[in-house]
Length: 478
Image 1 (cartoon, rainbow, N blue to C red):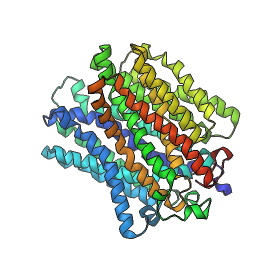
Image 2 (cartoon, rainbow, N blue to C red):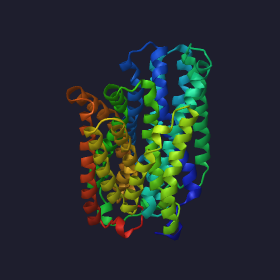
Image 3 (cartoon, rainbow, N blue to C red):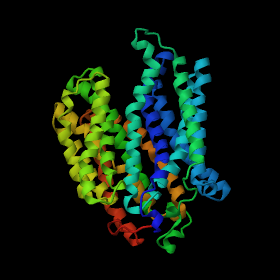
Image 4 (cartoon, one colour):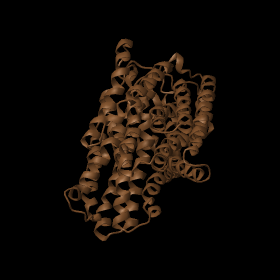
């Protein structure tokens, strides 16, 4: 590792983090589009869900296109055009998708709206393929997963404020007493978003981000790195299933929570919203906590930040919901549950495999608690799954691409392809709930976490055989 890589390159990381914000902003804002489209186009509930399908399936299609283009070029696409150019291209593709909303709104075309959202997702797929390994590479390997965790925390900041901004832009007139909702109200916010994509694309193009990060191109063992494809690496193959199941349990836990609270606890739909907000805020809480090592090597400061960061994120949740005029009284007790997160983070000592094992185990405990008790405590148990999912993406991603060398961007593309697990696992839990009940259906999440525990154990041995041991802090971007 060169001296240049001994510290996180904040001047490069901060502009990179903007794309992580966009992903969260758009993904969470889709929940606002669903009721808008349902009313504007007179859709059934099932038809309105095509919004989610169009967005999530685009990641898989985008990854397949990426691999196809690389195959035709007989060279990895990102290695050919460069990481910085890949990010800019992905943003331009997403910008084109948002601009489709304008003519789609003018002619009242739901399929064209979905095509626009699908195109936005295609751009995101390329951006994620580039940005995730790049975030790991912008500094020492020992804090690679922490940088990805921090980027995820920025993503969750987008999920927190995105729906509020889009909702205000679309429903502002309705709040003031106008109940007529026109699909044309979507044009301006998404036009502005498209312009923002283009501006950031230009800024990143002329930024100091590297086209070919040194830490990605270095290798630990030439005999390991000489393989012809990323699929020849067992850590990646097992990690692909890990990403599929992780995204699945993260999304399905939240998407099935309203049904549980309404059918089993008698909550009104309007009263459920702040609890869903707490779930997604929990991911932000955990990611801000898991990112502290990326800021400083000073152990004393790290100990302080491990307590400050999660409660600062929790304060963001409280402020946002206070602005939305929600009663905050039921949520203060959640501050005690955050202590479990802090203890788990300290126990992991920054090792991604150990963190994956500990947090997945706590995820199982949370789900089993929610399945075996009733009342508001069960809701907090299910909600706390967000805390324990918070650092799993960077852990799995870091472990899966470690040692891939020149195949890193290809491996990243395979991992991004598996984001479709969010839709499939959610559907599976819904199907299971029809047979064993909504509360017991969370056994699906328990099985997902169980595999992640297995992966954490298995991948440690695989990487050690390749000369990679995170406990000894081996450098080189692997």
